[in-house]
Image (cartoon, rainbow, N blue to C red; front, side):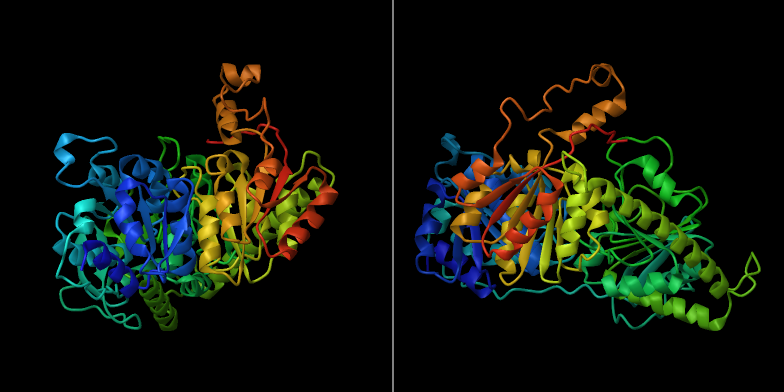
Length: 596
């Protein structure tokens, strides 16, 4: 068979439903072969970054792998923005790109480039196939590597002569690597820290031969149960491991505050849970504030560990014991010392620690510890304090909503509160709202596990195409994408995809006619720009973008909303219709400080 047929047969064998791309001359062999594989549907994007974003959103919403085909060097370059975002979010993608005939490479033809080196920084594996007989091995390896936790993108370069060459090697069945957790093996003690790699039955919590006694899981449980003020920070790894219920069980057993990592890509704890205080902010002072007084801090599946801007002071409280769990050993102890460090299956490990906590509590070894209180008494006190803080938080959120009822330009808090009233269990949130994000993640209280996709890497232009991919993956549900106006303009042609494939995404453009987060950063600097009230290169006016006209030109239903009384009717109308819809919300343009 031809090399391209081996590739497409592998796609069919591995259950690939969609191939996202934008073709060029070097992709013609593959496009020609697709005619014989109608079950692999080609989704045309008008820009490569849209193709990558759609594939990523599809993967995040489906728990499957997204597959992309880009056009040689310029096409791959166009797709690098969302490839970076997918890499930061650990999204499993197989990104391919056509390449010149290998016999032509030495002559440096137009469009040529080192594709493997371009993709390598943002992939788990990057390779150019050199012979048709390599295709079967390379494609199976690519899919296997992308799907093995910690998941992530891989890249394959496809020279045209390899695609059109003959191979006798059929596709190889896909290997699925399962990372188990709970039983701890290979634990060592280094510098006072207990570390381990997890493997085995998630119900077991032994201390096998060669491990320190007690085991790392038992040490973690002891620290959590004996703590005065334990704090848990959950990351995307919890959602990726489908470990939200296990995380809730552990947090409730311990009775502690829970925060989400900043710039999280998924929902790793229920937004309405009484112990949950929401998504963190990417700045050092905030992290210091929420962790002040904590004597045990537990990070689970967290990769966003560093603040966005340099912060010289320690973020973690002095003397606090640190527990860190993740799929990837690289993330553990990367920036800060971890007293208990365990790499392995997050779901199994969290369950194992919860079971170990139950065992510690059952032995009553924590009675009369330090302050003379039992664990149960200490837990009751903590939960009472948490409840008081939640009541104050609820009052503040209500005040934000009520203030916004009369506000013009519109209050983003009020818009999100109205959306919350209409939210149901069959809706999926895609969030690239940037400065509006704090209201998205505080006012929307009904978000559910597996139904949140947010911008992880920070590169703008992810949300609009990711929403389309998510809608493809979940055709019976409704995707609502909250997108900043600046973000939308990076990939506005994604609206064409919504219309072409009749994907009923509801786009809520929160429009402040500026790069507001940058204005807030300049204001924080308190330099000449802030003093003069001038923000060079940050205003999207003169002319102001007409999003309604843009949507209409692409065939998408649209409406512009400027008054509070118009918010609810516009949302209801958009959600009622089963077609793509864009609402342009003209929101508050006051410059506030950001990027602390």
